[in-house]
Every structure is written in C-alpha cells, then in structure tokens.
Amino acid sequence: MMTSGFSTPSTAARVLGLAGLLPFLAGAIALAVLDAPGLRAWAGTALVAYGALIATFLGGIHWGLAMRGVPPVNVRLGWGVSPSLLAWVALLLPVSPALWLLAALLAACYAVDRTLYASAGLSGWLGLRLQLTSVATLCCLAAGAWAMR
Image 1 (spheres, rainbow, N blue to C red):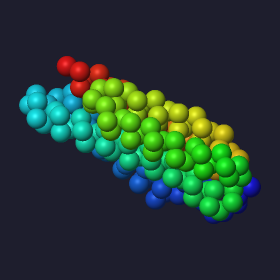
Image 2: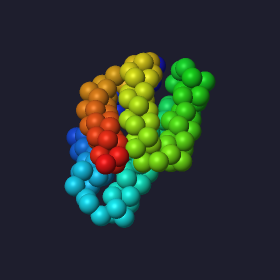
Image 3: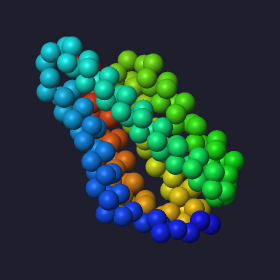
Image 4: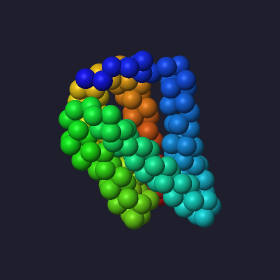
C-alpha cells in the first residue's frame, strides 16, 4: 500500500478541484440560456471536450499509481486507459448522447475509484471526489437534456 503525504486532499487540491467545476457549470448554464444556435453548438462542443479531458485525467491517475508499483498494477493499467477510450467515443457523438455518456463515465470512474483508491491508501480523497463527480455528472445530464431543445 502506498503511503505519502497526499493521503488526503490539501486546501490547494480542494480549491483547484472546485475551480475545475467552472467549465461544467458554465457549459450547462450556457446550454440552458443561450438561444443562438451557433453559440449553443459551441457551448455543447466545449462541454463535451472538457468532460472528455476530465475523464481522461481520472484514468491517468491510475497509470501514475501503476508506475509507482501500487497494486493491482495490471488492473490500474487496464482501467487507466478505459476512460480515455470511452471519452473518445463521446467526442464522436452528437452533443446530447455525448454528455449522457460522459455523465455515466464520470460516475463509473468514481465507482471504480472507491475500490482502487482504497487499495492505494487514498480513501481520504473520496469525499472530494464524490462532490466533484456529483456536480460534474449532474451538469452533463442537465446539459444533455437542454441540448436537445
């Protein structure tokens, strides 16, 4: 099991994590209030792109842990690429289904991390992860619905 000074999020990690929600909130709000089709399309594309980047980031954490030899290494390597591959599929879809896929993917990342973070001694991060994942997932779900109108 990995032990480090980072077994719980620092104040900086909390602030930066919350700041990382701003594009999710802005994208969802933009899709709810913008009337101009070009701007709505741009907002939807921007939100899908950001959601895909975040999903990829979440998978990358496991590659970093695998590189440090934190077991189960092969599971971490396999899971680590899965969010990137699914996020790539989302980038190929129309905005609404892409956002719904990303919402499901973000929730799946959290579900997997509940187990894999614990095995790395990082359960202290799960509270922050739950907060961030909840807001990001709800934004993707709402934006996916708003994008259909």
